[in-house]
Length: 160
Image 1 (cartoon, one colour):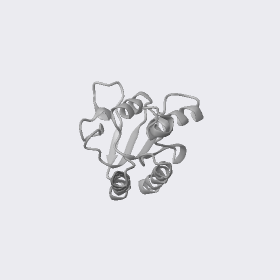
Image 2 (tube, one colour; image 1 turned 120 degrees about the horizontal axis):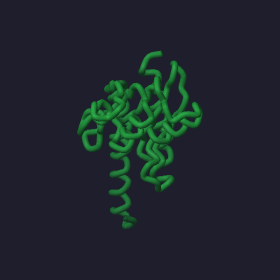
Image 3 (cartoon, rainbow, N blue to C red; image 1 turned 60 degrees about the horizontal axis):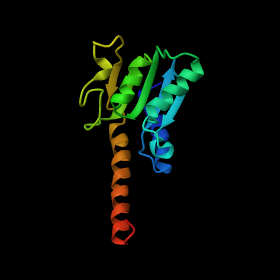
């Protein structure tokens, strides 16, 4: 299947996060052309710093396969992975990461640095970016735009 198909599934996961007022980031792990795990941000819901979409998807994939080694797997994610998620990706031996939008403030798959392809680690991932980049970026931009508007309204109405 085309990468766009799996990125659309990651976007569906991101929309689940948005529905519960989480930052809309979604992830899908694919192995042998089949979706084996999905995840979306739950950091606000769980009040747990590590419940990022990628980490949740990795945990589910490991559970499903009964191994921490996700060799041969591909991770589709709507936003470039952060340092924590990049570390989890390397540690789980995911073969390839495909992401939509770049993250200039925290991206560790090419923006700030590239932990996924650093030869000092014992595992490197293939990285592809820009798949449905506009859609992924707009999902995040509109979320934060709406959040800022809501906060301004609350402040104006004396609730903030």
